[in-house]
Length: 576
Image 1 (cartoon, rainbow, N blue to C red):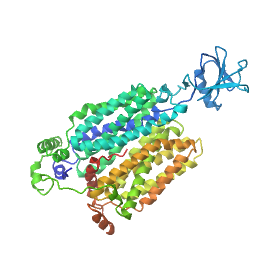
Image 2: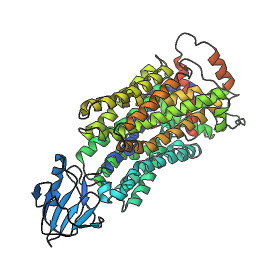
Image 3: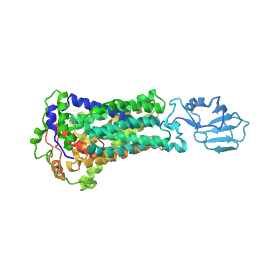
Image 4: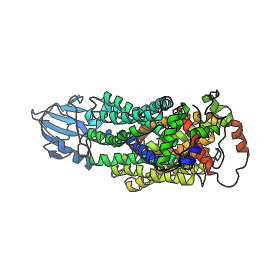
């Protein structure tokens, strides 16, 4: 794709005027919907207490030493510490022992008590299960009996979704170069709404998974392209801050999930309500213009001029003639055919020992950040207390984290902020492990602090990676880092299940990864105030020079300008 320096246009019509603000907040609002669907499975796959359904009508129920008449009333007793065994007597006189995954018929039906040592026959749960409906009327688990030997189906819901996220980022990133950003926004936003609603009407588990997979592709594709779209409309002076704060709208989506789940306890109604969040954007996306950057790259100069004129009119500024700007840059790509550029491969990220070491460290940070980001969110419902409030707080704490990044990266430095966040995240994981069981309020507070630290590092690594590599491999570096981070999001749901082996095993592993990543980050160079390198030679020369005093803020903004080309190659812009 051709490159175009459009900063003179923004100098004339405004870097972040009314026109850009209007587009930015419309597109950012749709990020809320993406955040919703990325974490909706937290409550979609809730597995309530359950027991095998007996093969007939029940006349009496015995649980421990308590006798009741209705099997559906037994769930309140599960909180009293009794073992998971229910004894029922059917109307035909048979006595059955029911557990969560097995049922046994007693050969001697004369006595109904919990102390039975006689012969009994084992049977599978062929008649289905009875579920505790005190919290949820229905979930995906209760809809299709995803318990016992089918429990792994429920555990695959989120990982398969994240595989769709990975594939969608790759596909729609390339499509946006060929058919335009606006058209891809139309396709993906419509897909988010259509597939989001279709999930609620899935007739079986397999159609549910396929529809969610397509939903993931649409949501990921939107995040990739909308990042490029808004960045190509925003001038250098506001681009870095706007880039980072796009994450905040994703965090709002997490909060919406918690609020909706609190009020709606039927999974398909819950899914439909969450899907309606995307309706305002679907109705408005048709009025969005194509970006001048893409139009110019396609040689559609007149259309680009009309968009620039519209920007100037909205911002109450004087427009500019693109032809005049071109005449000032006759040797640039506008007006000339782009010169042939050498293609680079993944091997170039390991061209020598130092470069290879840097790449491995950056990949580890990407993986750790994404793994920790989703682990803290998915595991929030297991912390104790109110699971809806827990998830809400995990989303809310991200917003100040991104504000901290915007403030700290140009004052403290990219590397210093990153190291501080990663080491802090590791320490908070350690603190969680020493909090006594039952003090869930302290656990939630420290987990929020951990999510703040890991979320901040994950939000910063995209920008930092772009600055660490020269232009010739910058797209490759950020794109490969984004792909590695997807592996973290895919394994994050399984990480939560490590607690079955030991309660704090997930926190221990995440803490170790965060600590190692933070210490290794000290080996990376500081990029604050340094101009972007074009070649490896320039990058090496910059590292040999001492950093001059003062802060060169334009250097940070220029990074985001070149990041447009990164996302075009299919990397995920927001990295969520």
